[in-house]
Length: 294
Length: 124
Ligand code: SF4
Ligand code: SF4
Image: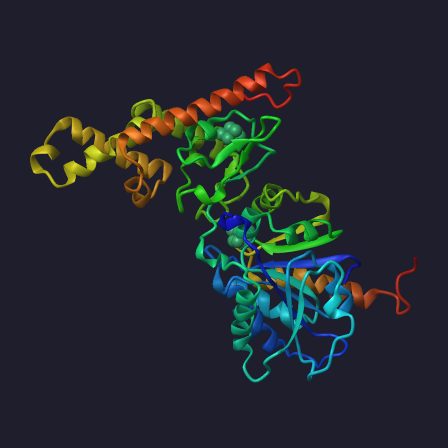
């Protein structure tokens, strides 16, 4: 089972009938601590709200004074509901109680992954498959109707927004990116013009970003070699690589963690092939409303 | 509070793109309001996991999401397999708006509604 399919738990802060009131400060301390530790929280004021849960195990914290909250532990649809006393003397320990519950339920601690992955704005996407053809790491795929999809979010390289730069429609978002429109800010005409310019720049630099990526090992060698750095061709390549880093904002760590040049070539070919196959399937489909355009 | 309303607060725990002070003030205001609300560590992370809680929230008739850019929030829900009906959802952007403005838009309009509501409850 991959990380994204692992079980989770939910924490409920109960402040309603059958319990004593939790102050705003206590509530804030407890909830902010839980959120910073990766928990999903609901603050509820009525027993009836417990029933809205799916099958996620729930830890319900409240000032029950040892009393039962009738009906709570058989909340509709909830696989497990555990009542626990809210630690008034130290709301910070709520996270420890929740952590213990998470472990008992054998649920996963999702905080170990920085959620960095592309999100497609289908209002803009034309299904052209450029992203699918570009990504070396198999993040993209197509559904049964050959519609582009983000399928393997956790294969994406943290902090690398490169595929958003190859999308001609500015349809790829990275919500945690520093700047718009990639972070989800509205797309302006200027943004569209700038994106077009970037495609032109990359073609000026050699027509194909992968050919520049492939030069990275050469560039890495040249960094330590005076004789080589005087080599004009190498300097040219280094400039291309720097330009690429700057233009499409690929972090140096990502460039350095790329596979060998041969593997890049192979993966690039595979990615390109996947994109071509998806486009061919769209063209051959009798119902080709999701027609890709480039 | 309007009927069938739910507030969802996103803490953007795994990145530093939402100002800490804004998150703190908004969360404090929610805790002081006495209203029920849902709070998630990171909506992005939940979207990647296709967390069923997003499906429950997507069905709420009147959802108010306090997170970041509306375009990001909408397509994160959509990417999780639980698209939002745009007309029903209000998104409050903590990346761009000051906390005070978000709090008054999120909570005070409801206080005004409550002030002007007939004492006996809704007419129909
Ligand atoms: S590159 Fe093409 S298929 Fe990919 S998101 Fe952009 S418009 Fe859609
Ligand atoms: S939805 Fe926005 S605010 Fe929430 S975790 Fe993602 S980037 Fe952060």
